[in-house]
Image 1: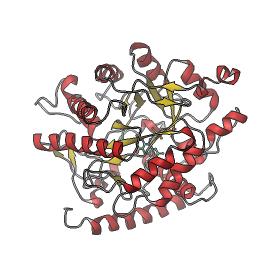
Image 2: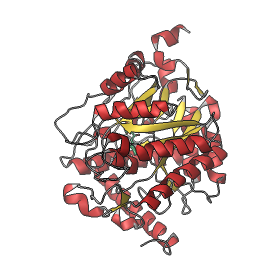
Image 3: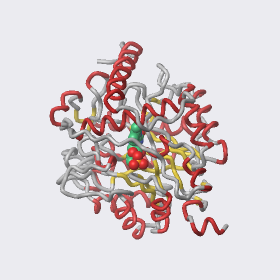
Image 4: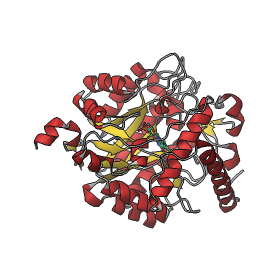
Length: 416
Ligand SMILES: Cc1cc2nc3c(=O)[nH]c(=O)nc-3n(C[C@H](O)[C@H](O)[C@H](O)COP(=O)(O)O)c2cc1C
């Protein structure tokens, strides 16, 4: 179609696993905090996925789903384990596959990025606590994992992936970015181990490699297994672009279906356009330069996410040789963005702008505004891009406190 030549983002793409996407736009992972008390998808969450499928993107990546119900990124999150009843997950995957859309479940272990108030496990490569300045006390002190805990985590990722396949998902994405457990192993700032799981990059990447191998060995060949990786963690002495290139090569050897490149962590939220060191990011498509360089040097499809909301920019990403373009915030404020671009290529979604000076608070407010919008979409309410940031932060804190209480009550016997 002539339109596709003009807009490379609308061309289909077949991943190495054989999964064909009708276009290059991927709804990137956004944790929604819309689980039921048993940590499975609620009706509101299912409605939200239905909206995205109808809205025209080629692939949906779910918000992160935990592999351990005692290690949660936050209250209201999802967990899928060996014994979980998959009925609600299966319904969600069915709704997300309307309109020829595909769905991949992002699977995650938070490691040390867990709130003290939630209780549960705080594990990491080493016992280095999160440094969030005056906000550090909200996070738990992690314990360095012993070998049996490492093997337990490998088994958990594998079980979650098997359950996702049973529930009808087209694949899983292993979350190794944004400072969560696998990123903690990858980064020399958080991995000070001197056994085979630490030291050289080869060793620091071992946990990610072992999980990838195990998931691929226990799921069918046509099940898509991808990885979300930081192009850098944007902290001095941390995981660098050259490390990312080397890890992509390792993942390519393991026949991973694609790698999504992002960046940053709670400490340095580059995925939100903020960096913790002297490097600055592009105003739009933050990680495009890294993604382009990595795409040129590897034969694995690359996706990049961060700061993309305009068709012109999405087209630029694809034209530069990057296979897939990930969009998160813009698809929260306009789930049918891709359909709109088909008829109005210049259309830009309205998105919130937070101008707080405290960067941690600004990040929190943005996340809260997006999550509130996700909830509104799932509840069938209209988009509200100009909601008050202060009001939203406060109501988000109240909601989080209620959900934390619900979680602590439900799992009281197992929590510390
Ligand atoms: C509310 C919210 C929740 C998020 N949750 C996740 C998540 O669960 N997993 C993940 O990999 N990234 C998560 N992200 C990061 C996005 O996937 C994406 O990398 C980031 O928002 C930058 O893309 P954008 O500029 O299109 O929003 C989240 C972002 C937001 C705003």
